[in-house]
Image 1 (spheres, rainbow, N blue to C red):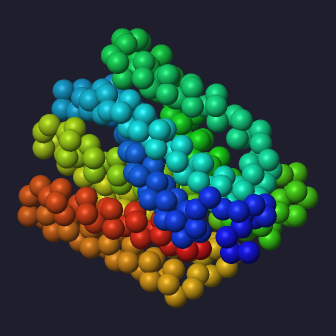
Image 2 (image 1 turned 135 degrees about the vertical axis):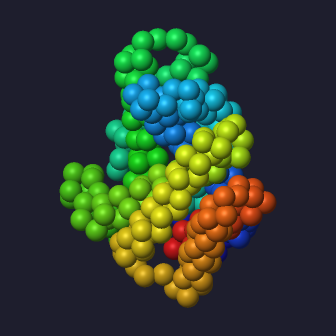
Length: 297
């Protein structure tokens, strides 16, 4: 029965192929999801900083950062189709069970995507409105956008823990107890990764002066520290402790994060710029090892 679905139908591809395609497509999708989320968070922050922080002339990063939003979100959305289809084929019962448990939130994502993408696209294309209207639109757009990975994390958390389905059903189709704690740390871990990837991207490709680069470097450092702290909490929230292979992948990711932190601090101490040839390979090492450990789990 190894070549059968959980629906007792023959698989269109061997299980190893499905796993490999899912990992590859999901990794590509996550890269641009993190760029999208990081771009949105940083754009809103720098808008507030430029209007109320007294740094309008020094830091005008919000519009330059937001102009990249269209490309990032479009690629994130398109590249998300493949892992979604592969999960439906490879894990039919757990995936659709989790979707139906959280069906109202799953359907809500349609409206959230429309509002978030339209709002950010309008603001990013240079529409001039009063700063308070701009602020309100930014917060609405950012809130809608940040709710989406929270919903997806909840669905994946439910799908990966079939032993908790009865508890979820008895709790009114909500994640409660340890499952809710695991979801929260998983969601925060995604947001921390978004800060890291977003800050790194805009440090190298958007910031045009040393002031902007130093500001983005602080975001990158904050995101890395956040990842290490939340990662520890996420590990402790696992309902089942990982095996040795999974632990090896996790330790590789942690080591990559520590090396990246050290590299940035050394460069900052010398007053030098961080080299993209060092940063991006380390970021990819961290991302791949973390996603690989998640797939092993």
